[in-house]
Image 1 (tube, rainbow, N blue to C red):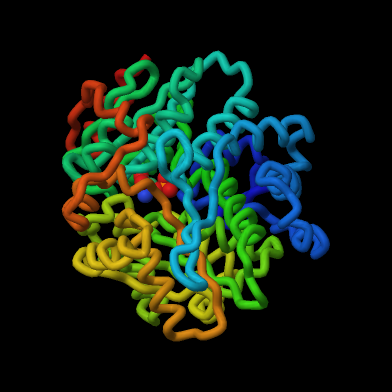
Image 2 (cartoon, rainbow, N blue to C red):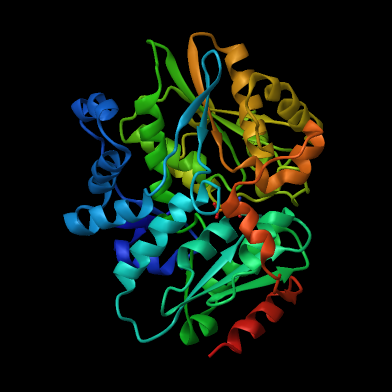
Length: 432
Ligand SMILES: N[C@@H](CCOP(=O)(O)O)C(=O)O
């Protein structure tokens, strides 16, 4: 299978090149040239299959031209080491809990897959691989964890100073070893711009082997489709139309859901739910797409003003805006609404995190306008990662899972930098 750049469908590369480069040289995102459709019988059999069996079938359909069956099994086994249960919150409303991995966020799936696939494809390179990552909170910790101690790889994480939750920050600034955190005096979009410029800089690429573990890289993006298949297979549908509501920032997660749908998973619609960083909901309501500076919110992982994966969503709908707006419904919410959702759902016995709360609100609004649906919202991170916000909303202390509390022990180590590319480039040029 080859992968084309969203900026030029004729610009195609192999799986290996797409993964190692991360971003296409024309600044486009790589996309599979063909989306394989799974046989109907397989979709019908999903409820009898384990998460890993589903993984072998889905990843096999996408990668079997490039990887052996053994490699596909290794990749899936390495990735799916924890569950992604669906939990009933209300009648016809389910939470897909994606926080049971090592760093308690959905990014663990993609980060684990990405690190494994990269090590398979890079092989015994004599040159050190530098993984550059921009994070608004969760990607940083998942990638740091996924690549910690991997020989021949150095991870450089750029995060916006003061704009990620204290626990998220601890998760990627305390690890040491091959993980370095750069604290950028700016917003997430500045971090994302810096890493993208580095990938396109001829001098840097002459000297260093740079790649990405953000969802711009297909190795991070594609495996996120797996939990849509799994959740669908476990949902008691009772003949109702299935809707997924996805709290969205960089829009990779919802893109992976649309990929699953186009591979034959019978999802009726998607809800793209955001905080006040609402450029995509505005587009879905008919405005032209217009990137804007990001605004800090209580759901900080979604504080993205220029979502990287927007071109990928356009590509998935073949550039048909009408179809895109028909299949994906956009909603956005203020911090007050987010906090109210956390408060109103708690008495039902379920604790939302601020991102899941935005997804829940989007799902409820969609269901109020469309009858006969059953809905799943993605709980993208554990509420404990945002304990300041959640504890204040609920007026009670949260019990942190041990593996989250353990991060509090470490000492924060960062390199502060400004948001100019010259400064970042200077830092990279000094690496040996
Ligand atoms: N929400 C993200 C921002 C980066 O997104 P990615 O999916 O492209 O890595 C974060 O938590 O860092």
